[in-house]
Length: 151
Image 1 (cartoon, rainbow, N blue to C red):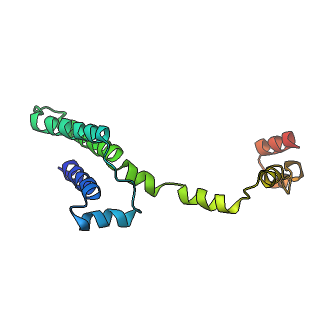
Image 2: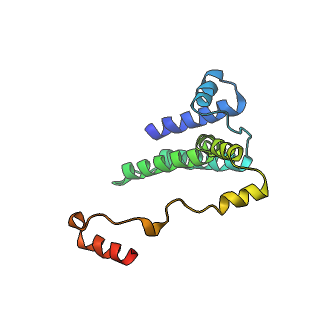
């Protein structure tokens, strides 16, 4: 029952984002994330429809058995995962993108090849050999052995 409701909400949210027929739902989806690419992929739509139809078939045609509740639960989780990975993946990816970070780095770093080579060849301020291990009183024997190997 819960998987069916959440699956219907996923379909409704995707439909609202694609068509814009329900401005309130589309606005709520767009508030959570900036506007993702909303082009219809027929392959994605076919796979999402296959997940939904398979779940409906299992629920409506499922035989009575001891494992019926476990089967329905597993089918519901599979439906939700399948719909999330097909219908909502571009929306999820857009929110988790590193695009803004990459654009900020592009503005920060120099654009000339000579300046890029100078940044890449810069030496670290403190080489690893100058780092001293902690006092041996508070360090376990394994840590002391590792510190001795590093020096």
